[in-house]
Length: 453
Ligand code: TRP
Image (tube, rainbow, N blue to C red; front, side, top):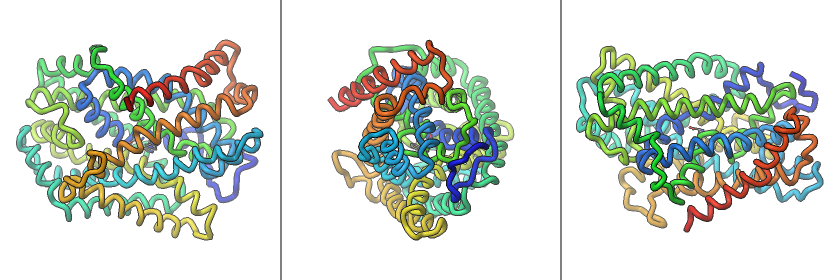
């Protein structure tokens, strides 16, 4: 890679492929398989799904490109990247606030992400024990409720998941991880396809019902809340707005084509979410479950499939292994910006920086975990701690930093250089300009205002 200005402490991606895998690994995670379906269910389906799809391409994609572009210029952690790039463009260094909110946000997200990652990990064991054999909707619901009520159990798995995340991050941008990604990601895709096939096969008319629930436009259901949720989720799902893609961009070689790489990542990310929706909702309808079940949705529905299909136990184990892995490739990306910052700004080495940040995140995670049982009634602004952290990050911080990034990229940076870097002809450059200067910022502002009315 031609990375002349690259700092010594930075390892480099082994190839464009390696970078793609890491970026897709960060993007594809619990957001696609756990969060997307339950949000779609809570928001009444297609209105949310279609707006989310639109936002992924029109808003998410340009911001993804800009985060990488800025990260590649800055070559540092998100805060100092924003500061340096702003100064080199002759702008105020206060732009580093975009980076600061980002680092704080990734911290907050990881605290609840690790709790859910723990659920996924534990479901590997539960599946292996044959817990779901022959189980139907009520049974899997019961199992999940008992599971949520067992604090020690949840704590153990949250700890295991956080420990795994920290260990990988402490070892640096892992070549091992890139290699593992190449096997696990396609594996997850194949299993999702099998599940969609199974759902189509057993759930008869419910499959069509699920399809129209997710995709038949019902614009009457579109309102500010659903739009803000869709926008926040587009950011969440692409790992945007938290300086993460910026941090990854700092490892990126000059020879990588940002636009085509971003397009591939967005498409992959969308495909996984859609497959997940089409695997889950037919089972929801066929088993008389509630689409608006909430964060437990996949843990209540998918075990029904595994409990009743041929070879289900093995497939279930495999599925939750792949899911845990997808969650890990995302969680390490959530830890990376904080660690990178501590490493550059304090005398701490990589290991101590990782241990320190993980401990704080782990402790905050315990508060989220208690929101599902002992502290279910502890509410602030009418939300428990888990909901509050999710709300604060997805609906406020992600859109705000995303807005900051796009305004910075389109109004504060030299556009001629960006055009050369993205290799755009006249036509595409006008499209890019109109999109990043006007459409995206205005849309984000309107949605934010509308969402809070
Ligand atoms: N995108 C990941 C997912 O869908 C989660 C994630 C990783 C994330 N890094 C992020 C979300 C940064 C927001 C910001 O599971």
